[in-house]
Length: 159
View 1 (cartoon, rainbow, N blue to C red):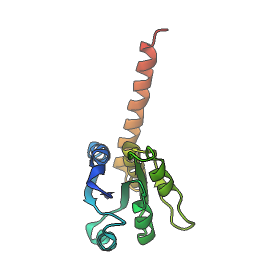
View 2: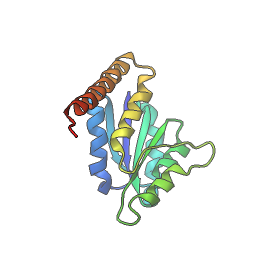
View 3: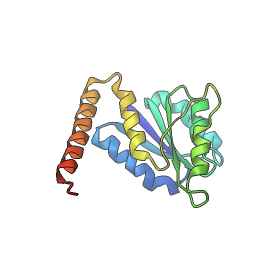
């Protein structure tokens, strides 16, 4: 099991680190790359062609502004792609969100919230868990811990 974390620019690195931390917590192998769909299309193509030998199972793509990286990767690959629109100074990430989510028929990109790196990682883990019982158990425990956390908050609330 391996996840590719691909960012369009090094400026996306702080968001990518959040996804990497979740994958580490679940002991899911990953690799990170900076590959721009606009400035280095040949590198995108080369990377997709190398995914089988690298044993990459799915991609999480991070991009801001004209965020076409996830769509380009989805168009070139048969692997699932999760898009993370990254907030930029221009339109608070709405441009990236719309660029990532508005895909043509036949080229799906599962898209999470703007800067939603943690949810992208959890979604990737859920996809990988379909064929991995150990990962399914880790997810079950994770969800139970979330439930316990909410119950503890409820017990502490005083109005």
